Length: 70
Length: 359
Length: 167
Image 1 (cartoon, rainbow over the protein chains, first blue to last red):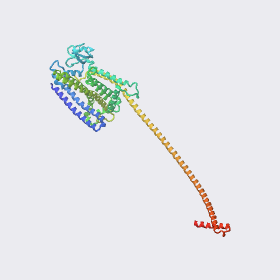
Image 2: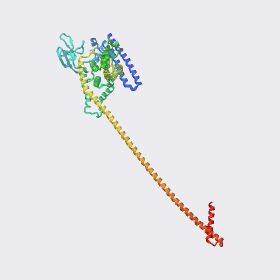
Image 3: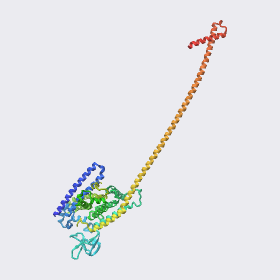
Image 4: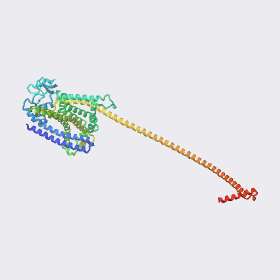
């Protein structure tokens, strides 16, 4: 196996770890917030999706870089 | 990039790499990698399945313009199994593997301008037609109705529910006061992505094409959002980009923040494009890889094969449910982020990004 | 095969089909649905407003009726009160009249009775005088020849007796 492929795989894994931590934190905070303020659920959900999408965007950039290294 | 071209395969398949290597030792063995790539990629004919050694597939028209020999238009049936027709053939390897190339007089291959109705294009056209029929069909319902006629049921009711909930819960709060101007665009994008995603989940002919998981499709959608954001951007939006409200040493002499903001104009739709493309393609790849497990394990004896078939079917059911969710979620996220970006560019009072996100 | 490289042919078809889809749907599709939704919304709002107004009117009417009913009741009570007052008055007057009449009757009766009693007394006195004369005549046959003087004497005696009994 090429070193590039290994690098790409490791990079993808790291990106996934980072995105997982980030989205997990958002999810936990959002759940907490909803638990505290159930009436603001819609707003919190919207913001949660937006921020998760931002994080996911970064992770996807990393994924694209891994693709290019492949 | 050329390296990428012949080596390019999806990360998900790395999961199954031990199985692949086992399959590759036998020349007649099932080639999972090319199968998955063949299905998520594009092709000149729509492969449905193999029956009794023969391939069952829908031939699609090939439309090619070559600067040497002009326009060519014929059925892709004529190019099957590496046949050559009117000087054109599907390249088996090299830089243009899988694409139509034209042999030059000096023996080298040149790619003509290719407008063929490939599998993805055919899926795209079918889905577009379906979408137009569905939406115009349901908007026709209102033609002879007045405000006091009873609310529609059935599909029109579903459409109306979809539209009203999207407008009320997503478009109105994200875009802001003049949401009316952008609502048709955002609704079109949502329905377009959703329908293409759902059709992509169907396993056989009219569906199954990996349309939204194709970078060109995602690129055009992101381009449309880019244009919607920037063509209708307000003065405050442009001022925030080129003369943001930050300490002046960040702007003069080196326009640091303006540069970042300016790059941000392009990275936002780029992220939209990559997100949609990667999510949908990953979904297709995961489902196909799980299906491949059955065929890869044929070599390993009946016991392993049957148990792996069971596992594969279970995982496939799970993945299909997940993809159903993702199909909706990606359409929703794309629409929502487009709406947020449009809303940001529509601000007339002094915009503040953090405040906007909270909206 | 680059998955990350957009195909020019696909780009062309995508631009074309998305453009057509967008043109058709954004022109003839969604605005119709949105308009219909909005018109229905405004219709519902208007209906709600009308219903509220009607309810208010009804409430108004009901309160008017209530007021009318109340005033009628008031009037009825007034009339009843007046009637009862009148009745009381009549009864009072009748009672007064009856009382005075009774008093008059009683007075006349008393007068009559006293007159009768006087007459009876006179009569009785006369009888007693006659009896006393007869008695004293029997006792004093000879002495009292003159009848008139005898009677006068007896009466004077009786007067004396009476006066002494009264005092």
